Length: 202
Length: 205
Image (tube, rainbow over all chains, first blue to last red; front, side, top):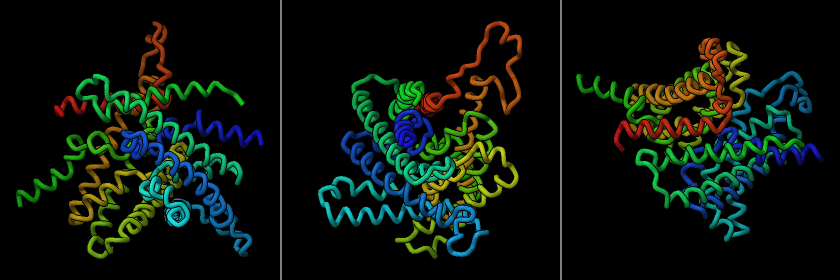
């Protein structure tokens, strides 16, 4: 239990998927102009990460890992090189399914999250979390905690960035630095602030 | 004939500097910065990405009249994923150490926006040879940023280039110290920000 809490806290703050591993930058840069859309996309990413990471764990453990097909009578088969294609396909399929389920049961949530869901399938943070989960040998509960934590960390970063960019609207930024340049530098400063959490030991 | 050659050269060199994918089109920063702590990994990453973009552009452009429009994204993803797996397996076979250091970032080339972006905006509308050149050009443009950032970070952060010490020992005895900050994640963001500033000032935008 303690282990799971520490993975969760670690993935939100110290090992923030955006600020420490640079994943999900594209949508971060293009969406963080607006507060409301940032919150919406943040929620959608958290949700998709919390669902897809454990499912990808199961797919990997029972179908792809070396020796995983023992239950089907093929103990020598190693399909782990297929993990990239499989993870992308699983993520795309789940995003599609989630979109339909939300549309059916909660039209309100659909109207606020719906437009972001297709964008998420190609968000590097989702695929990145699945690949890190394999590389770090997490078990099922750990990968769930890791997925949820990474999603929350990503949301925290994008919402904070949207707030900073709103304030920056009133600032006098040098001409060549406007837009992309100043966003990168403020992201850097924010990443520095997040690094302070690494002093915390658990 | 003359203009055709000119066009090919333009397609090849424009994305290298003037229309750089990272600086101007703001694509593909995602998976790139984490590999820039050392020059060596950055160069390998740049090579892998250039090959993947070039060949995915070539394949997608050759198939562009056969792929139905509404399933093109899936078809493109399959082509890109196959190429990335090949690149990953080659790295594992011939450069195991570097492939360990790059860890998941080679796999993340699949979701790198440059690959999909070039496929969507260039390869689907142009013949294979031009698309191949466009892929090489964009790969070099992306790689040059990656190598520049890695050069600055490795030189200032650990006083080395490609693993060799370049700062003379006398400097250290005179009180020079490596800047540990350069090895941390925030430094990459700030260097990119400053490079964008330089690029925009030079092109007066």
